[in-house]
Amino acid sequence: MIAVECIEVTKGFADKTVLDGVSFQLEAGGIYALLGRNGAGKTTLMNCICTKYLPDSGEIRVLEEEVYENEGVLSQICFMSDNIDAFDTKKVRYILHYAGQFYQDWNRDLEEKLLDFFDVDLKAVYGTLAKGQKTMVGIIIGLCSGCEVVLLDEIYSGLDATARQSLYKILLEEQERQPRTFILSTHLIEEMTALFDRVIILDKGRLILNEDMENIYSKSYKCVGRTDMESSLAGKNILHRKQMGTVMEYDIYDVITGEEQKQLEEKGFTVSSLPLQDLFTAFTFEGTKEWGGFDGGA
Image (cartoon, rainbow, N blue to C red; front, side, top):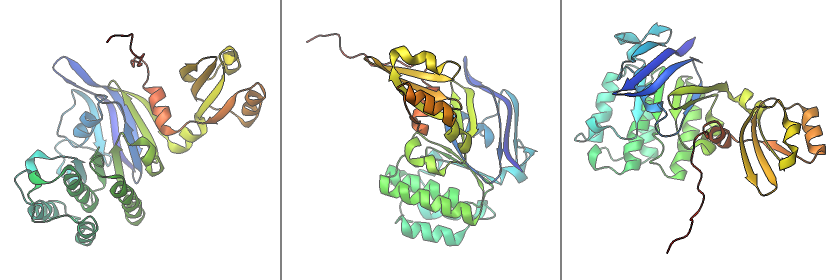
């Protein structure tokens, strides 16, 4: 089943286009990364999927049905960010009780386990909580909602490293127990890579990558060699070049066969895999300012 489908989705605010003809399909039961630099359109896309925003044009289907004004489908979508203003004056106990009433498949057993594990104070008022505790309330709602489609927008950034690692383990265990569709927007790419089945990258509102991790692993390379050796990479998709004296680093997204790698290494190249974090940087680098140091001054 197709869990989420976007067809030429466009959304703008005032005179700025935030989403520009975005199209993709996501199979049900996967964990998907939604990546992009700040302002790329990630949060706007999630808000369109859950109908908080209406696209200016295009179509969004969830669980193979039109999402807008479809109560049955909307009841199967949970969207959580790291801070929800509507909760500010409410106690955590009330928020979770209300969520349990709202989501028909709410998992009370999991709620209790997560509250105990992360030591969440039910008596606290949400607006007085530290960012990490607010984050945890949103995560509990996302995981316990039982929804078929769960959208988590940078919700892990308020957690410390130990809590994040615990969250990733819990998410994978829950996915094995009850497979659902998770779309995770994040800047914590390196530490979350192992979670992802597929990666979507937005840049300036446009979709520039939609690939499963198996394909990404098979086509992501860093080749390092002298600056006069680039002709040996002719025909390969070089995303980014970085020069360091007489040495050039080439970030490549293309197939390099075992024989091709051997030939490149014989010519003096060092060939290694390109981590997802570096691949993302390479894909979104165009037009980015590079720090050139100080020209002088006092």
